[in-house]
Length: 430
Image (cartoon, rainbow, N blue to C red; front, side, top):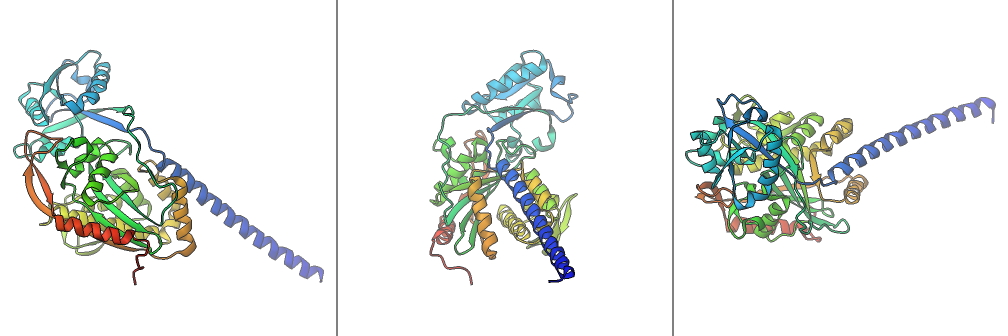
């Protein structure tokens, strides 16, 4: 072999080695970034309770410290006792004095007290503001009161058994997807405005997503046999939302995934936006005009699309369908080259805005499975139906609120669709 040929072989070998090193470094980078993100989303933080201080819109106070000397109103319901004791202590520290407190029998009486100025400030969980405004005669609350500060604390563990997960990744499983109505900390307890059960069959690559309207009239452990809106279950912890859906459909839920509005917006923006199909032309004021057909949406536009209900005759049912369309669009984008192109930004957006009880090793096994066969998933959707009505709710007694009474046939059909998907022998879609 000539010296010239040997030199050429060494050059070729060097180039190949360099390419392999680069590939290895890229792979190591992707793995390390993914593992960091997985560690964040699979680490369940202590549940955080947040209660805000509200005053009337025209009150001069701009922050909590400005309310020193104000008479405070609280809802001293039995279930709120443990929440109010630590928050009143924090409030006293901020004010530099023990606040004068007036107790009201429910949230509607609390709002009445603020409006009549029998108290000048109230302590109120942000999630209840919209719920109060849903009652007839209380529409004024949405624009008539103003938040001037929030008090936050971690909840002490109650000693209740934690939700159990499968030891190994099963071929079929059910995951609860909860979209909470907050920005900021994913650990904050809040209403669950998005309630989707995804039945997953990794063998047939089938996913059946069932959306349950947020106003479904259900019971769960915290209600002690009474009924409440499904959305309110999230205020008492994700385990209550899961219990409500398991009781409704008779399906065992293996995992949950919680996402707040911050994560929703950030992930879609990191992906470069998503293309979402709309059944109707409609407009969300100050956000976007949506047209029937496919719409290219940014994160905030997708959020508005998923939250809107007043533009539709079917209201919450259409909103549930739109939510699943957005999820479908995100899944399609994540299985395209756009994910690798924006990998770091997507991983950064996921961290801190998502929370799941699926173990890290099981998530990685799903990723490896997908990379090994690279097959497309067939995603089907279904939204359960019901009849609108006015009823008393466990968390908001004192006034009737709008609820949806479940349609038994619709619930049974949803259950059958999920059970079919969860059957290991389910045939792949053609």
